[in-house]
Image 1 (cartoon, rainbow, N blue to C red):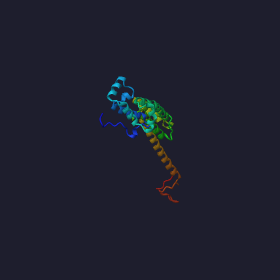
Image 2: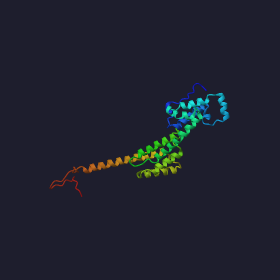
Image 3: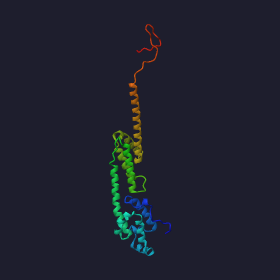
Image 4: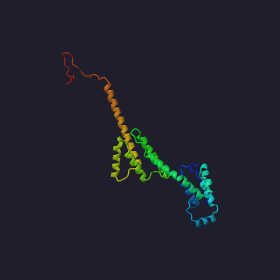
Length: 245
């Protein structure tokens, strides 16, 4: 192994308790590079383990050090007494402790997504919150994922369309019909963009209507001026005079 191998992650990637999935991915890479992955995860056969220990007698101690080096101190102290410096036991303890919490957090995000109100007065805030929660959920499932899976994306997108307030129901129905004609599933980003466009058009129409109403009210409140054109004098008819019929 070259001298350029650095077993320590930067502080922002060390295990904090809330970033377990991403931390695990980073640790797997480090352990694979060092050749300790199969041993740590319990996938190494006894014969292979014995053979490797003859070549590298300190491999268990080093593997344990690599893992614990990438904890915050508070977390490391939770597991030291349970693991007896055994990296396989440490890895198992981490899986049993953090993985259920990760699944629980995923369920919490799903619950938040499907309980976000989409009211007419706060529709923009609602769809932006759903978009952010979906991104957070994807990060929790797979920290390297930029976009949700096709299934999750379509489910959340359809939920948004179905739960649009009455004023925007028709927009959602038209958008869904377009996607069916094109034989594709509406994505969440596309659906939110359609809703944003509808909100903008609605706001522009409201502003236009408010301007027309205000102008009419101003016109109705102003005194009507007499028309400025030639008039007739007593005993004389001016041919340029306009008489109302």
